Image 1 (cartoon, rainbow, N blue to C red):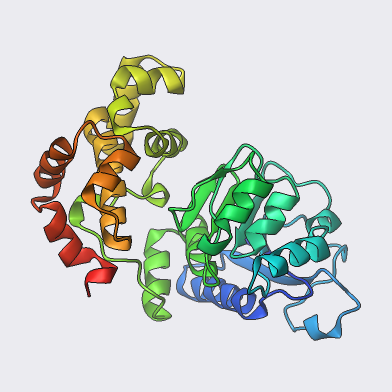
Image 2 (cartoon, one colour; image 1 turned 180 degrees about the vertical axis):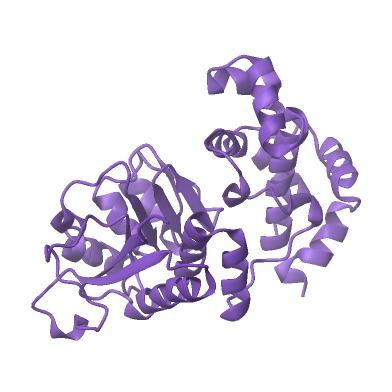
Length: 322
């Protein structure tokens, strides 16, 4: 058995400590439910002169600990864009206290903590998400980030971001799944009665980025989500991925058990389903935004995949229909 995965939870002035402690509790639950301890957790005070951050879990920086395998940056209290700007100015140097970030380290940020990752330059040329009401400000301030704010959770290589003050839930469960296994993750979710993800149709159960089994399918997933539906030919996808059509089709079939076209179509239609469930956009607006050739074509594809019309899906799964 390898050494436990060492997770450093960074606390700083104004940070939301409840989320960090909940993060620690979820990993502690994983240790109790797994066959052996999988995580070592340290709460790191980024400001040693602040007594409010003293806690039994706290580990002093530079106290001989090995490098952290994962660093977690929480949100901080903010009710306006001015608060966000001031929080960035006040805390943007937090990560610099820990020296250069190794490519092998995982960096997690949630809620307003994502702003600090962007300020530190860690999100440049990467995909990331952020809390919805900050997205306009963040797009303008950090245009070199691929903001995917229609998603609650985004992993791009070793950087993982989540939106919302409760973003610690998907982040911690992702770590549990990766380092303790899916069965332990499910046990932790049941044991701690964690918030359940939104209900989705069976056709989209495995359409999320977090469900993709390999680095190739995760990269391809991001590509498919960003392209218009009319540009998802095997030739276009293979060219963008830098491989032959035959190789890409074979790899996707091996990794997902689905043909390339079927898999890509399912990812694109999952975006349609998400908008039907989480917004009041009209079918025509969704069709135009996601680049389908026509609304009738979208309706036919969606019905063939789910057995439901667009309006039936919205009535069954839409949060605004309840």
